[in-house]
Every structure is written in C-alpha cells, then in structure tokens.
Length: 356
Image 1 (cartoon, helix red, strand yellow):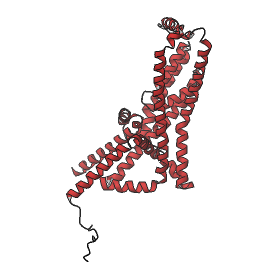
Image 2 (tube, rainbow, N blue to C red; image 1 turned 30 degrees about the vertical axis):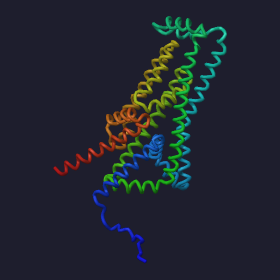
Image 3 (tube, rainbow, N blue to C red; image 1 turned 45 degrees about the vertical axis):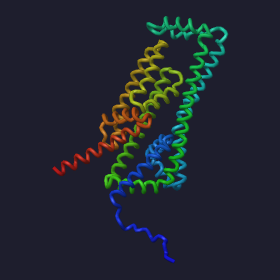
Image 4 (cartoon, rainbow, N blue to C red; image 1 turned 180 degrees about the vertical axis):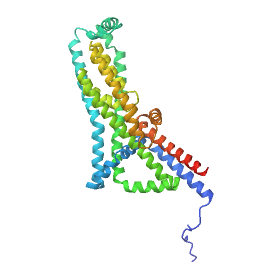
C-alpha cells in the first residue's frame, strides 16, 4: 500500500509578504475580538497596571523577605487598605449625617419645618431666602411630594448603581494586581521580548519612561493629597469647621484633580463667614490658598515631572487632557503618554543634530 500520511511540515522557508500580511491581519482581528469581549473589564485591567507599576518597589522589597506569592498577597492587601480606608471614613461620616437628618425630620414632622437660623444672616439674600424656605417647608406635602420622592428614588438608584460598579472594578483590579505580581517574572520577560520585536532597541527605554511617569504621577498625587488633607484638616479643626476629618479627607481626594480642592476650603470659609466667624474664614481661605498654591506649582511638578524631565506645562496638560479623555484613570495615563512622546521627540531631535 502506498503511504499517503503527510510528511513533516517544512518550516525552513521564510514566510512570504502575503503570509506576513495575513498573520498581522489575523493577530489584529483576534486582538479586536479580545478587546470587545473584555470591554467591561478594561478599566480594571488599566487600574491594576497603574497600581502594579506604582507599588513595584514595595513588591520588590517584600519579595526579598517573603517570596513572590507572599509579597504579592501582602502588597495587594496594603493597596486595598490604602484605597478603602478613606472611603470607609467618608461612608461612616455620611451615615452619621444621615442619622442626624432623619432625627431632625422625625422631630419636626408634626410641627412643620423651619429654615436654619443662620440662613437669615447671609448678606443680601439671607432674609429673602429664609422667608422662601419657611413658606415651602411649612407644608410637608409640598416638600415631600410624589414627584420629589420619585426623583430622589431615581437619583438613589443611579448613584447606587455607579457605586456598585466602581467597587466591582476595584475588587477586580486588586485581584489582577495579585496575579500580575505573582507572575511578574514571566510577564516582564514576555513584555521585553514583544516590545523588542515590535519597536526594536528603543522599546525597553520607552517602557521604562512610561513606568517612571506613572510611578511619579502616583507619588505626586498621593503625597500631595496626604499633605493637603493633613494640613487643611488641622486648619478645619482649628477654625471650628464641623467634621474636620471628613473635610480633610475630601480635600485630599479632590487634590488629585487640578483646581478641585479649593472648592472644599472655600465652601468651609463661606460657612464660617455665615456663622459670623470672619477672622477664621479669612484665615482658612488664606492658609488653604497658600497650601494649594505650593502643592500645585512646586511640589507636584517636582514629583511628577522631575522623574522624567517633564516640564510643568506638559504635566498640567497631561493631567487635564487625561482626565477629560479617560476619566479618573487619565490622571496617570495622561502624563505617561506625554512623557513617552516627549522622549521620542528628544531622541529624534538629538539624532537629527548628530546627523547634521
């Protein structure tokens, strides 16, 4: 009988241009399908990458003491504590405020509601605003009409859905961070190989610049946020602002977004002014402005831009453009993208100068 079994595949021949083009098209098609399939989890993947890059030095230090798996678990738990602690504090404070509002509602339900006395002391509009509120608050049925209840229910449903979505993204990100750390040796080796094959020798340098930019951005935002929260939290307590811890945490969180943290201390200063605490209001406003000015114009540019020699204007544009394009994740992606582009620009300029 004639042997018709196929012989060994011939792999010595170099692929033709058509084969290479077909391979690239197949790879791009598979990539597009994978992105479409994992679209829901892409934010978690991006956040996990940012968190892993930012905490990489901690992982290396922990791995030197307790092994790769133990270090991955320890750093993942540490990230969870650091991220969740401010949220827990804010949730506890909000729950306390909700209990106070509910108690106020129960105590005044049978007698009608009255506007707080301090509203009448607001300059120019206080008397009119207090009169308008009293006219509407006395009628409980108009205050809690069916339309308002439906609106509040809808808002509650939307906010609750967004909160669940964000918490789910965070949990998946922490899970992915653990596996990134545990498989870090293999992932780094594969990343270097693929980068070298796609971009050549500059790949390693560009990846290093991007990682340095992300780590510098995280360090800058985190350290500046902690500093603003600590200093202005003390200022809130000294000036007599209620719930100073909550306002301090909120200031630190909003400090990550340019020009957002002043909203907190300006609002607190306005409240103090309404309470006739003029000196405390002016002091808080001046101290808060000084702290934010130093943080935004000196501390943050040095921490973020110094690691990659990125000028302040590009740091600012990277943060603002990143937030507009990618949301909160853009705080870290924006400066990293601009750092890579500026590095390429500098290398091309240096090559042209040498050739000239």
